Length: 424
Ligand code: HAM
Image (cartoon, rainbow, N blue to C red; front, side, top):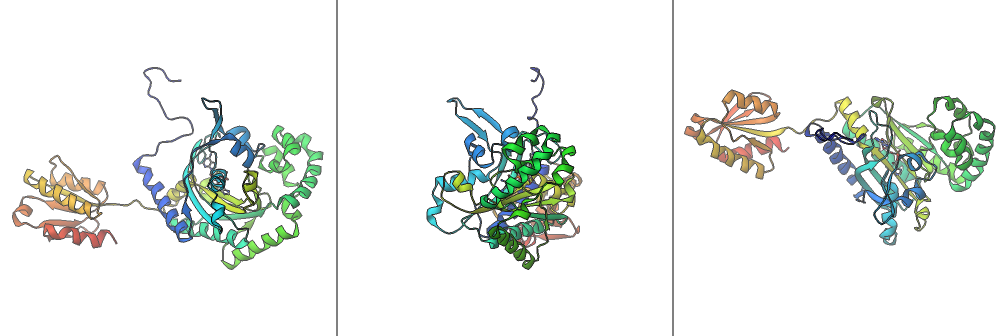
């Protein structure tokens, strides 16, 4: 609650992004669109609000997300709605709702946007955060798994990120999982008494979720539990072997992490995460995997799928720390001296902007030195100077702000001159 005169602040775990930061968000989004487009992914936009049931059925009722983190409320007609904590369930819901399966073939979809989880906020962890994700629906071919990972590695490379590690695992299919869960339950039977409350409950309801436990004291016990990877059926084992072989062929480095079961129930077979050393404790830059049974869980036809979601907040943080992306500079700053210069300056700005060159002009008179200072502060590539002598000669000074070189150019030629230099 705020006192009446007190300024109202943003909700805990949510953030405002000001222009000093938004350019980074735009850069990574542009690069994602470019790289994902090259792999023939197309954008899908789904609502932020969904029926609570969607996440209960897909993410799973025993997961941290559903039990503790969702923003769920009753609408005025008492329907239970939830602000999406993730988008895979929404994409598959939309795929079913719009019968995309009738079109046949594979659907490659990507999305970007805000997700909501009521977690304890800290660096890299927020209650409203953004994901850039992609899903492939309609194929269980291991080649798709490898292609999706190749695309991710290319995307991170394109941003200039280097210090990252790809971890992979297989969580099998319902058939082999059934057998494995028996073994896991037996192992847990002997040790669960000494574990945290969540683990004790999950040992009975959904033992795989025990691997999501973050309680320090439980880790030595969890380390010793049997792994799904050692209990895969021949088909799942073959699938995993093919994914690994394909990754090697594509020269993609990876590590096998048998504990990587991921915190959502819909996964089958391949699961993966990419961690970044630059990120500190919240080091998962992205996560994903196969979910060959998800469509059926949501009432759709059998449709294998695989996808990932990148935590955009963390991606931007890692890119910022690595200093690997640069802001787009302003194209041109136009400086005029006497009042007669204002109209030509505004006219030139309009012409440059029409040619897609970014330009700035001030409407209040400013001394030349100060003008050029503003041009530097705005990080302008060029300054055009329209002083008294320039107005008299009919040729303006065009200054390259990085080299300091100046050239006199006729106003009608300036746009052409700058275009080749700025819009490369
Ligand atoms: P997830 O692992 O829950 O997977 O989230 C993916 C990524 O979102 C995480 O690796 C992390 O970077 C980011 N993230 C998650 N929670 C937060 C938070 N509170 N604050 C900041 N970033 C966060 C999924 O969401 C699946 N839908 C991924 C997927 C797509 N699997 C298949 N297809």
